[in-house]
Length: 147
Image 1 (cartoon, rainbow, N blue to C red):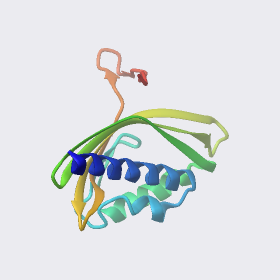
Image 2: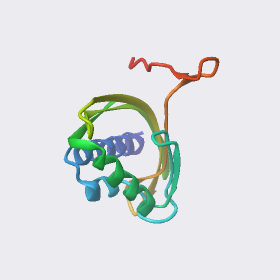
Image 3: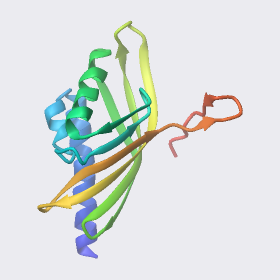
Image 4: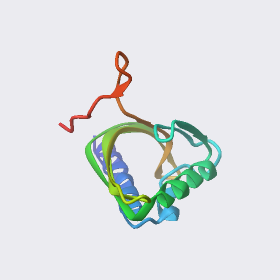
């Protein structure tokens, strides 16, 4: 039980490091939380895209930051973590706020599920899936409730 609790705390620390790096616009530090090779898989919602490999996802972050005036901020809420051996997953809400390049306010909340692998004693994100619920009858996004 202690090992699971330690692993959960380690994954929570990964998520905290990611948020701190994001809030500092430090893409190098953000990427230290991901598998550093081509095995990383990310399914993103904005733009609707798939990324295979760490370099491809790094480029996506560079492009995303270029769409903001100043540094956007991210907040993680409702973080849940499950660990079993050398694999684990987390789920949470992430809210990005800031000002886009046109001067419009941004306040966007998404659901994020991360799959983790423990490699050399370190937890790294190996799979990331970002989503928002859609009402298929209207095609419109359904607001997320952060419970």
